[in-house]
Length: 149
Image (cartoon, rainbow, N blue to C red; front, side, top):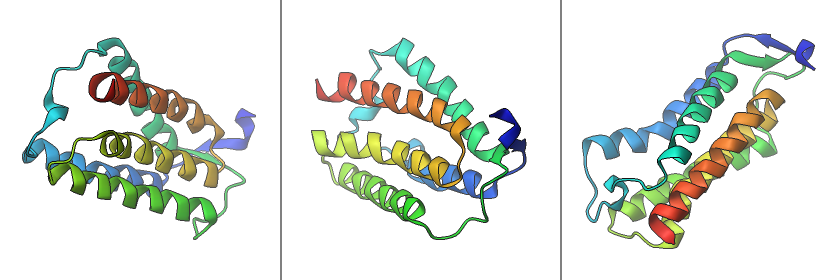
């Protein structure tokens, strides 16, 4: 399995990460009204695992390439990744409008993870699927425990 992969810079993986982080950078600089996301997390261990997996996920989508993957083009998985990104941005807009309900929290949690997942599937990057899956679970637990339950 490892023979199918090579170390090679994947610019599209880095760009995906950066565009997904844009709303986070804005949030770091400009607090939202009713900014519940700045509350202290009660899932510190889960958050630590999520952070480690997030780093591994970004490294995997940015520098590990499947030798069988073709040049990036519009495909169903790339369209789904783009749709997830748009849902994510819409959730941030709703959050900045003062909404903090379950739908908004899940919109801030699930779509960015799915965007990474669909990208990795499109790029045939099975190695990246492992940290993406763990990060997704941790991110969902964080959102649910801290802001929904």
